[in-house]
Amino acid sequence: MPPDRSLGGGGSREGDLPTLPDAEQGELIGQFVNFALRPDTQAAGTVDFADEVDLGLGTEVRRTLSGSDLGNPRRWLLPTEGYAGRDRFLSALRQVTQQAQRALREQQDTGIFVTVAGEHDQCAADPTAPLEGYDVDQQLAVMPGARSIESCAQWFAVDLYTDDAGDIAAVRLDLVGP
Image 1 (cartoon, helix red, strand yellow):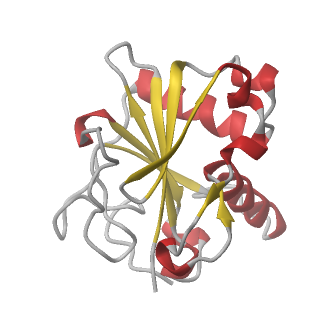
Image 2 (cartoon, rainbow, N blue to C red):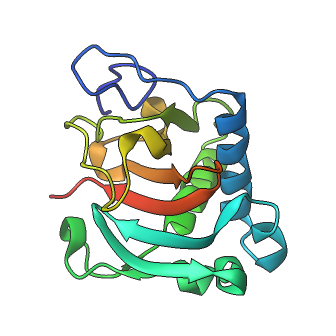
């Protein structure tokens, strides 16, 4: 089981507690998670997305979506090109769904996800730099709870970056590499 240094993501330094999202940020994260579980055009309309949304892996923007593309789960698939030792397509939506399905299989009803506002650790490692063009002050994260995964190999973070209006302007999938 990965270290449980705090609420499942940790602050930027050993022993720091993460900053919890405020009510408005928590609502935005909830909108995204609900959309990720059943992505389609109608569900995308219930999320406060910016007109264009950058999708990233690690620190790199890989694609920009807008309009009806946001509701198409296939458009969320990003080629890994060797990212974090992976050799297939990855999707932030798929990671959230797989975590929720794992929790259902294991009949886990608490600690499935942890949410953080701002910078967070990468499982047992230091934080990943922000997605290019964005700042940690704009960052919200949803991650598996430390007790809901068995190792850092199962850890992920879906980082949501907000614009000045508070809408989701970017979604970044962050994974632990080999």
